[in-house]
Amino acid sequence: MDVVSQWYVVLTRPRQEQRALEHLEQQGAHVFLPLFQRECVMQGKRVLRQEALFPGYLFLKSVPENPLLSKVRSTLGARGLLYFGSQPAVVNTLLVDDLQRRTACNENDALYTKGQRVALSSGPFKHYEAIFQEYDGAERAVILLSLLGQQSELLVELSELALA
Image (tube, rainbow, N blue to C red; front, side, top):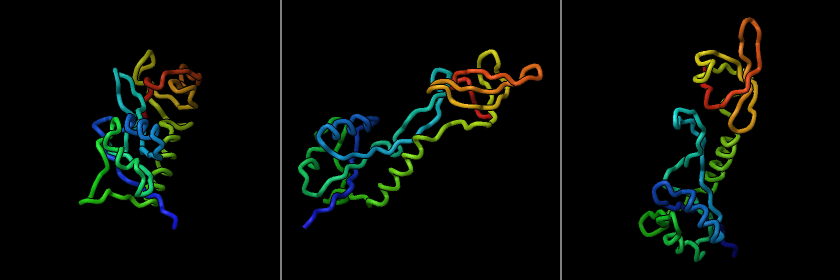
């Protein structure tokens, strides 16, 4: 008889989801940490940060008899499995599959799209509006700025842009 793998919920220590994920993977576990990108301001600049969708939790796929399940509690970054009564919490596989699909799409979401109106929030053209053209690496973007009746391409830091 084949034993079917199930998804379990792992409780992590505060802000140590990534650490728990890495150490569980080093032990050979199949682990999933749903992440999303959030725009925040750091040192006066807008940046995209990846954050845990469920802070303090991640998912572990395993068969019920796997000895790894008892080692979760002693894994760096992890507090243990989430229990309901005396049984570890099991999450529906379809739900986790859906989360994986949705967060994979979210990773590729861009903050700005071609043709979108943006405003410059700092630099010499502060308060000017422009049209977003494309990304130039992870930190910069090409925009079209109207100056003196002409549109000029300008390369700016992403941190200088905001939605218009």
